[in-house]
Length: 536
Image (cartoon, rainbow, N blue to C red):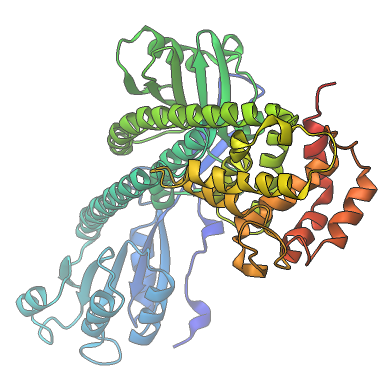
């Protein structure tokens, strides 16, 4: 067969329908989604069948989408093209090609090996007696079986509509299944975020993922297209963008002036404001809005997408909202509880530090330096935050040391130093056996942050890696900042002298790994020191 004369269209030659998403603002960037044509594979060893089929179906459209033809002339070529184009909507398949069962083997391979249950199959044959219709329909998962002689123009067009609708419905069921899977998955991930901004950004991305179920199925994005969406929080009359995609990404952290927003967006927010509902999903013009009121009713959260979202997807988003609604209330409660816990820890630790002639900012610096070191050392985000908070309590045991020793301006005697050492044990005793993991971590840090890498520290004289890494981190952060600060018993050291001391004590006092990490990030860490200066 001469393959040079085969007729095959590529996607660039097709006229695509366009759906424009444009704000009322004339300066807004035009967003384009292109309707993808349905792929139709013609599998037949007769060149004339290919030509006639394309001629009959020329100009065929369903719901604004045309056809993209793929030509195959043998069983082997058909199988290869099905692997290359798993999204084929319909295959017009000849039963007899290389032999009398070529087409039937293609059906079995497609359904059983490729697990392709989406593509609709129209079997065509010029020799119906070879493969009887009743047996084929019973034994093979096909949609229609026609003799080429009876497949008139009108019957072919009617069959195409029926099969494309079946393809679309099965695809919709797959979308719903995938959407429900994403709803369930998203529900499991809602509490992995560490700030309200991260939480809303996660919410925004989950909603976009639900929207993308349809985008990926029916549309192809222009290379410059990015779905415009934002999450913003409104307290009284003030609104701030906390998360964004597309053109809103560059506006994260900025105030949102709703008086200058497009009429549709203003109307959407106004509708939310006037509603007594605690949560809503509403479509207005090109906008899909999701609204959630916080427990205190003063804070209102919005997610807005600029998109043409189908009714099916709105139902998925509403289903997701039922999970989001409860989750956001719980998240805010947990966040408030965590903030309260942090505040109490900082306040108590500040009292101890102020008593020992340190400043509250020393704690903030140690916390931030420990956080930085832990992050650079590869701890996950939860542990980084736990180390940062636990580090604040490293000297809480000093509450059990008398002022005469704690505030002594000169060098401590041997007996006084032995008493001073007990602050590690006292701190551990105060913090251990808590039901809060962060306090148990703090108990370990309090006990071991004066251990030395060479074994000459206290209270247990641990050596090297026997010292918990978290304690080694806080030891470096504490000494580094203390050397740079004024104390009752010394003046602040210079930056150069401090660096030299940390290097000299690497492998003696300090963990080499932690000191190396400090030096590799010294610029960032010194910025922390400068950001929280002691008050004169």
